[in-house]
Amino acid sequence: MSSSTISPTPYNPTPQIPGRASRRSRPLPATFRALRHRNYRLWFFGQTVSLIGTWMQIVAQQVLVYRLTGSAAALGMISFIGLIPVLPLSLWGGSLSDRLPRRAIILAMQACQMLQAIVLAALTWTGAVQLWHVYVLALLLSAAVAIDLPARQAFTVDMINGKEDLANAIGLNSAMFNAARAIGPALAGVLVAAIGEGPAFLFNGLSFLAVIASLLMMRGLPAPAPQPAGRQSTLQHMAGGVRFMLRERLLLTLVSLVAISAFLSMPYNTLLPVFAGVILKDSAQPTVQVLCGGENPLMSCQSPEALPLGLLYAMIGVGAVIGALTVASLKDQARRGLYLTAGNLAFPALLLIFAFSRSFSLSMLVMLFIGFSFVWQNALANTLLQVMTPDELRGRVMAVYTLTFQTMMRLGGLQAGYLADWLSAPLSVALGAGISLLYGLGIAVKVPGVRKL
Image 1 (tube, rainbow, N blue to C red):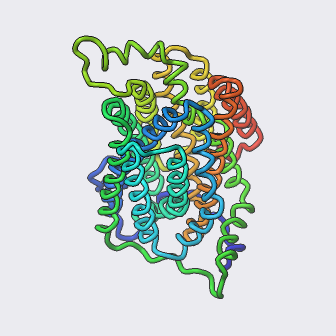
Image 2: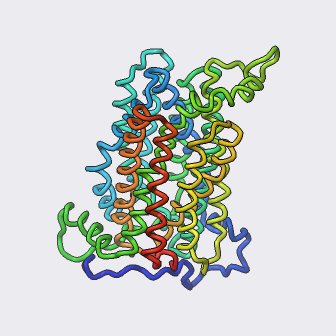
Image 3: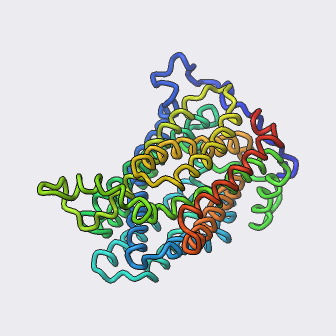
């Protein structure tokens, strides 16, 4: 059957599969039911360790770039540089993940990311690091991630042997990601403040060993889905996923919601060092003083400016974990499209509050709810895309999703950085969030099919 004749898989995350235990006999609570699959358990714990390291590197890299340049535009340039390999490699990575064993692809790319982190650690720890080093290494990292992400997204189904627990696994993936988002920045804030950025980069490099070990320990993974009869070129194979997406209005709408949010709302991440180090600096001083000041400080601080940034990231992560566990706990018949719509509207609305806050305490609280609403938007969009996509097209469809997300997020970081230098960081965040909120309202009114999913 050619890809042009395939229609979306109906949304039914719990088909009857022979030999599967009933829900009543499962030893795990419904929120964690995907963990009953051994391969997924290995991935969950190994990837959690690795993601903590990844978030430590993200925060440490932002502190390093801002320390070297003092420029919001330089922070945005990191996002833009990361876009360069995404455009040519994401769709190719999706095609590879539909034709080759996904575990092998992920293993190779995880090893590349580990090497990048270790090189950055060595340069920073020795004091030899320059801005161009960070740019080149960011380019190489993004190339590996562009190939890795489609395979990693589609690999979830392989680990749980079908779609029965797919929605739950995607929710747990998001919880894993955001638990690391809470822990990693907090650890990075403390580590960078105490002894500099280099150790945070080294920890990230070593953390990849956990996920590599988990992948090597997996057993019984399915072979790649059979491909249509007849020889297809790589370009033809890649185009099959794009054609499928273009035919399906609801899939396109879901991707557009994520794209607009990534371009206009998510760049607040790029500007967080500016908020932590400038906008909220004075109101954050009591917190910094408790940890680093006084006669008996709780810790020795080499770079105390890293602490507010780490705490803001940690609050985002805590809220996102709560949101992700809520998503994972949704019943099979839940209106996920309705919850997605709520998250899509709440996320930019809360960013508007954050943009104009001058209180570190209030900003911390708002970050908690921003993390919650962001997950409701993105984890649910990811879930709906995967359950509506046939197995043989999943890698390529998720490649389109990740390409769109990565492209718009990195372009958004660039525009937000330059707009912040021209106007201000608060106005940059507020303008993006306001336009994103208007688009979300338009979709909620004009495309009611999304709410009914």
